[in-house]
Image 1 (tube, rainbow, N blue to C red):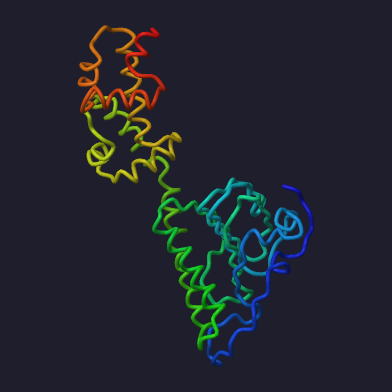
Image 2 (image 1 turned 90 degrees about the vertical axis):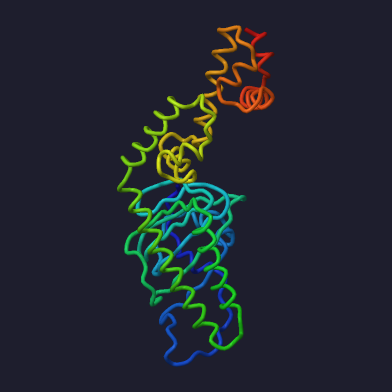
Length: 289
């Protein structure tokens, strides 16, 4: 990250059109309007406009939907990728890389948004489709109301902004709970590895193993990715193919019998799976020695 002193990002965002007149009791921001800007537009005029270290006088939420890079918040640098939500409270120094493939939205809450928001920076890696859709939907609804000329549009946009605050609260709590249970993830991965070693010849699927462990297949895969960077399915098939290679290279057992012994439904299915993983058919692998 390059260190520069620069003007707030909000100075370079596209100003919103004049909002329709609201009721006197409408819960709108007092000092600065909330607004949404595509992250690509923030770098107009030079990447330094986002990479330079700066702080804002209002909270900011960055929602990256595509691309990857690094973001520095409060002196800590982390990588970001697709479906990462980064919340930065007012007054926190930050900057982030942006490339040609980076897409997403920046939500500026205004200096007095009237919405409950986290007090500390948050970097949320949103892996589930449901929360991803909820956040994108809330941002889309805010944009639609800000662009609308219908009565009460700004109040409606502010209510959606409140729902965005609720989304943050819920997902920050989920992330905190997961961070407190790193040992639980390692224990589950260890249990999976143990029963996989015991039962890999049985023909069980990842769903079967997940049921045996009392979790969902999605959770099991997420935990395996977290603990070793590989999916539950990858671990299962790697173990099977390793055993198949041993049997093909060290025994003369017929290929059909090897397939049956490893739990494959047929020799043809075994051949397709083996070739997919190794680039070679079982027969060719055996001939190669």
